[in-house]
Image (cartoon, rainbow, N blue to C red; front, side, top):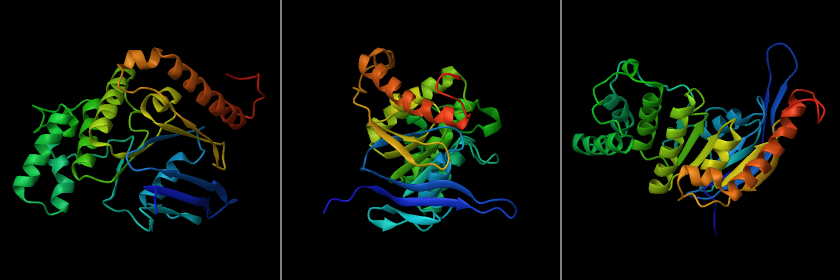
Length: 268
């Protein structure tokens, strides 16, 4: 029997503060992701995108429902899932090489294995010459490359990315998007990518999940049928890209207007 790589099954999450009313962050969320698929999640601020990602990562439990990976329920964080945050989350006392080595050392690999894997990802992320630099000596884009290299190096089955390029300038963000797409083509990792950018979601993904204004539910799941082997310029200029971007944006826009309490013609 075929099993999807990831199944989110009727997941709800309610936060209960010490004072005040409970907050329903997620309400009966259902979707599945195939192995090697790249899926992005978009929606208005506060719709529960990051909360959903942290539940998949095993950082927080759902109030109800379950997440299954290869048919097994997620109960806690595990090495089968790697997560990349918007904040670079690097160890400031470790060099670039040291940061990439960290997960490999935790796995107990030999020094020779670690050396070869670190070299591979230093080259893949174009970090040659910076192996002995510390995070404080790096630009934002280079820090995020290190964070991505560190996560990929220990070879998780699923890569979870929470607004990983959100803090970067526009030019660096475009470069990182291209690099991530190239890495996905090479590795065929299963990727779940949270972003506020509709254009970024459509450029990177095979499917885009649109979430509703809080409580977060699945509003729509949109297939992205675009030839990603083209150059970035050709992808962005293609009629298929423009059509899909506009479709996703129209779905997101409806929910953003609800978030601001606006009528259909009063904002955006």
